[in-house]
Image 1 (spheres, one colour):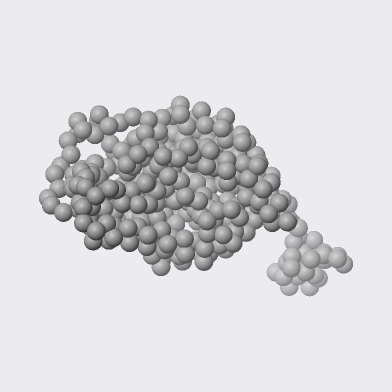
Image 2 (tube, rainbow, N blue to C red):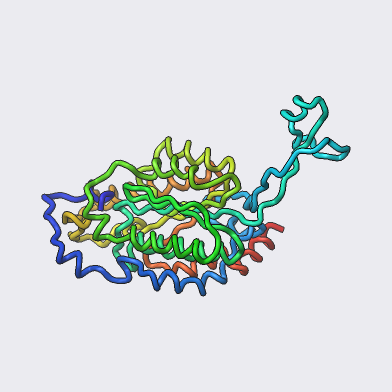
Length: 335
């Protein structure tokens, strides 16, 4: 509810634990079995670096995935035809003879999920909470990654940061899913006192989890972005491929019909009054500016931006962007 506070007149009232307990269901907290079952639907997703489907995402100008990186193997004496960009100048200076570096292609590519579980993510007016949609999307992407031989790592942040170094196979995904379920519990998160750490802190720590050549998915509603956010994204973008996924609710796309509405952040309640034209315009302007600023931020750094709504079928939306049909369509358009 934090982003609605400027529109909430009157005194807030505390929310009882009983009210929160009765609201827990599959739309407010993901289950282990649900996220594991997404493995079957993930088979229709493709994260292959040759896929051009990212060109369809908002925020355009996306580069193709860098794909699997290159690991240094050894240095040997330079031979005619070797790429001079791979010269090993230190060995050359030490031995007095020109040497070039040899690289070996990695067998796996790290895919890193950076998942925002801050208080504003525990919100929805319909469908499922943004935190639940993010957990489903992260699980689908993780299952798709390991199905194609890639390793999966993660950084989950909700005041604390939970870092998962990239690991391959089913166990890598199950480790992520267990953390997603544990950290997306609204009873735990919404009862914690407010904390200052947000997206910027997570992005600065993300470089500890990701290595050059990684494919990084950022799942957040992106409230609180600023100039520092842009600097972090620029640094990460230099050596990795980034894809931004914005979690939104219908109330963040258009104001509700004129009326008074009760809202809650899990600790307090308030009233959202949209009866006046002035209030509705201020409401629309606030969210329009937020969405436009985010699009500009990602576009300026060539980061594709995908929007997921709280009432979306996550698997269907991801298939439309990362499925085989979308890839063929994008490639035909590019040709």
